[in-house]
Amino acid sequence: MKRQLLLLPLLLLVFGCAGNKFYATEYHKAYDQYGQQIKFAVDVKKQLMFSLGQAYAQGLISDQQKETALKAGKLADIALETARDTLVAYMEGKTSRAAVLQALISANQNIYTIMAIVDGAGIGQVGGTLVGGAI
Amino acid sequence: MSPALIEFLVAKGIEAALTIYRLLEENKAEDEELNSFTVEELIARVKAIDVGDSGQEFQDGVDSLDEFPV
Image 1 (cartoon, one colour):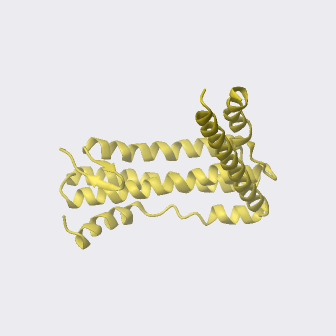
Image 2 (image 1 turned 90 degrees about the vertical axis):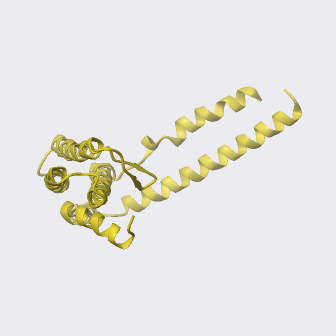
Image 3 (image 1 turned 120 degrees about the horizontal axis):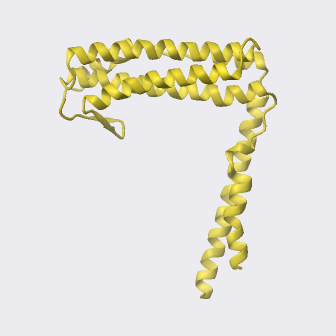
């Protein structure tokens, strides 16, 4: 009985892993992995910019920090567009998978910059609600 | 090990196995749905990803507090 119970976590590992997905082509896999990553990154960026707008309205960030945030946001927009277009190019057979990864890393780096501004302003989020701290 | 504990563990084991089966079936259905698209359709979906406008998103955050003043 004990041995059978111990087998359960093993079965979970073998059959429950996300890596066991079947893809018709490598492009289906690219869409599922990189396409979802881009969508997720867009959502994170949107939420961060929204929060910074709220922070500005509450006087938690200065005009200078606002300008920095808007510039970082613009760069993130461009990087996300680049990542999306690179994924399209890959799926059309015009570029390499490495180029897609590079574009994704670049987009994420720009989002981290926005996060750093949020962090520098002493702003955090708890369950989607803005909580302000000292500048 | 008491019979009650064994019964409890067996029940939990069956519950876990059923959960794994359900998740596997869900994953399979998702895989089948994804694989039913052609590459061209997937490309169209990627092209349709709206990356948004960070300036507008910032302004939306500012405006949201007008609606609900703190």
